[in-house]
Image (cartoon, rainbow, N blue to C red):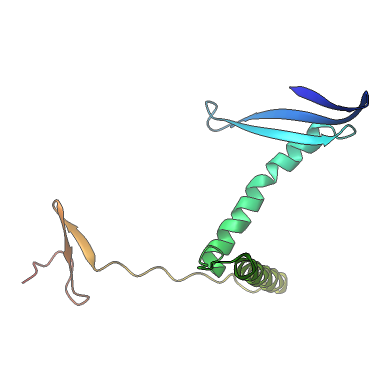
Length: 139
């Protein structure tokens, strides 16, 4: 669907509604609204809509690795500083990772998270001791 914006009777921009169907899940449809100059073609809008996932993955990685979402501030200036430093740290880590990959260094593996001391037993949870196997009865 395409709709045009007019200014004094002259076309200036187009509004687009894009729908994308997943190949793996054909029942799922993603919708995008686009607003672009007249010379932008639909393939360019599709390309830009496709980059959304890469951007979301970048923000998710910044949350996991650099604490992007771990701010407790009350004012815009504090929030802005936190976000800026977290994204700068993420960019630094990405650059160092790319440089290491260019040199042929093996990728760094994240350590596995430690197992929880809480183990499910029937319908309840029990706290186990590290030296006590989960299957051993607790005293």
